[in-house]
Each structure stands twice: as C-alpha cells, then as structure tokens.
Length: 481
Image (cartoon, rainbow, N blue to C red):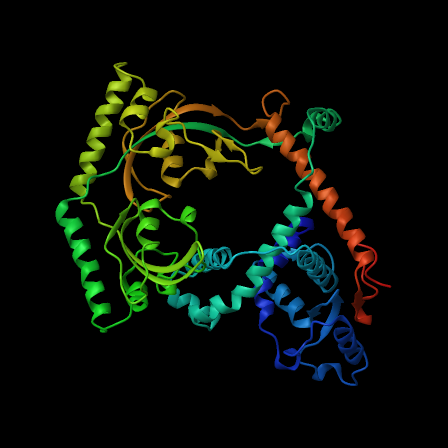
C-alpha cells in the first residue's frame, strides 16, 4: 500500500503518540523559536553526529520536530506494511511540519478540546489495540507499558490530533458549493471517471427488549447495596470497586470517573436528577435506573452548573427463555405483517420498543459524512447483526427474528427488519446521487482551500530546517529559505 496525500497526513496524525517519548538529551526543548533554532545550529555543527541520541531537525513557528519523531513514524508505517510515495526521509518530516502548522494556527485561534473528548479518543484507540492483540495483557506486553502508562503516553498527542482536526474543520466551515458547481464539475468528466456509488439500503426495524426477571433485578440491586456498604464502612474505595465491577467500559478503567465536568444536558435525565442533588462527596447516591442499567453515583466536585462524578453501572442479564419469548412475539408480528393484517409501518409505530425509530415508521437513520441525517446506509455502516440479515433480504421482505446488542446501551435485544429499498452499486448520476456528488465536489473544494492555506501559511511562518533536508523534493515550496 502506498501512502500519498491525505493518507500521509492521516498516518502522521495517527502515530503522533509514538513521538511523545523522546530521548533525555532533548527533554528540555524550549517552546521559544529562537532557542529551538539555536539547537538546530548546534546539531549542524556537532563534530560527531553518530553520538547524538536525538536532535531537532526542523522548527515550525515555535514547534520543534525531532529526528525520533520521523523515525517513529517510519517504524509504525513499516509495521503496518505501508510504503511512502517518495523518500520517507523527506516526506515524513514535511508531513509532520504540516501538522505543526495546524497546531500553531489552532493556538492562535484558541481552539480547545475537552478532556472527555481526549479520553474518549484514547479509550477508542486502546480498545482497538486490545481487539487486535487479543487481550489487555498482550497489549501491555507488546507496548512494554501498563494501560495507565499507555493512556498517559497517548494523552497529549491525541489532544493535538483533535485540535488539528478542529482547526481544519474551522478553516473550511464556510465553504459551500451550488447545484451549478456540481453539474459543471461532473459534466466535464468522462463517463468512466464518474464515481462509483456503493450499494445503499433503507431499512425499517421493530425491536423487543426481553423482559428481565425480578429476581435478576433484585440481584443487581443487592450487589450495588453491598458496594455502598463496603465504601461507607471504609473497607474499600468507590474507585476500586468501579474498576473491578462496573460494566461501563468508558469509565470503569478510570475508577468510574467521568473525565470532565459535565452539565445536565450531557447526562441521562434520571441520572442527572440524582447526581446534581448530591452535596457530600463522602456519601453515595441511592440506586438509579436508566436505560443503560442500574447505577450508584459518588460526587467528586461541583463547579457552577457542572459536576464531576464517578459511578458504578451494573446491567441485569436476560435469560435465554426471555430472549426466546421476545423472538416469539416478533415472529407473530412478522407473520401478521406478511398476512396483510397490518403494515410493518403500523407495527413499528405501535409495537416497537425502539424509541429512535418508532415515530418514523421504524425507518433507521444514518449520519452521512457531511453531518446530514439520511435513511440510506452503506452495508458497512449498519450494525453487523442487521447487515448480515439485510444482505439476504429482497426489497419489501420481512426478516425472521434475530438477536443483537444495542449500540446505544449495550443491552441484548431482539429485532425484525424490513428491507424498504436497495440501490445497487452503480456509476453516479446527477438525478439519483446528487448529494453524494455534491459531497465529492465540496470535499475537493475544501482540499484545494487547505492546500492553498498550507502554502500561504508556510510563507508567513518561521521555519528552520537542518541543512541535510534542504535538497529534498518537497510537495510544498517555501520550507527552504
């Protein structure tokens, strides 16, 4: 696989985290541009380069790029089996320098990201690695670090990555295209150059939530009461119990702690009502039921209209008997739809447990790349259990009942689906695929704007490069002065 253009930018951003661990010889690099430049000069004049553990090779604004940064990106790309389109000794530092331009502008524009956003991105990356390696233990062995150390290593670089993404979004947020722009662009393309639109489907769904036995609810509540008693008696801490037992993957590893102060609007209403009434950090809330399960909450701090809390979540488990009963109910509904006793749309409106689709005749909605809600899904964007079922359906056909895990709350649920429409893979046409074609033209406009912005930004930014890079064939002019 060759790395070019936007792929290069993505890879550099995605492996920023490796560069955060530097050799001790450069751990004191200053932010001041003149100081960093002086370090470049001292490197150039060093009598024995082979004795240098690490060095500053570029300075962009007041941001330094180290030789280790380049080597770590190269190492990661080799591990991924990727090849650079050009000399990596030149391509990699230039792409790192472009990232520094965005960071420099983000600081000027006061772009901010929240700790919760950073923590969420870090956890997503760690969870992906755990899936790739097979277990938390194997990941720790592979990285030669504990999960806590991995999180600490990733933090600053994922924060930078989010800031870069938001700065890019901010730069192009006012760019638009008109229908005339779209027609003009695609009228100039030969037919065999028109984009391929992958198969898209529209799907309607009816769900039934298997009922949880009262015995199971009592078990969960008793466990939470026991946790409360153990903390109150000083036997252990709330955070320890959260790490051991909480079933919220987003907070359990942090001792149940939300990574940032949150307002009421960011929490489940029932959860928020109890959390915001807490006043004593030493006391634990009553048991709270939400759509996610049952919680106990501990206050950490309050700041104005925001709070910081930790919680323990337990989810009641459903038995196979309860799952089979929910499937049986759905099977009966599907049979009546097939018999014409009522429509799928009517059944979805009155019988489905899915709040998100019930008021829309069961029609599922999808967030498109441009942030617009659409009922069209590419198969890869459907939940995997639904995609497997839909793949074998004909348009208008209702599926057999099946079991799935809700992406929203992680609960086991049962469903039937109807394939409302399928548009097979085809060459784009302006009448059928206007929105997709508009997105292509808009993305091209944004890319052209960013490209021009980078070229202009280089001219207006202090840049200093180690002499050995001055003969590189860079994508952008202006680095060498």
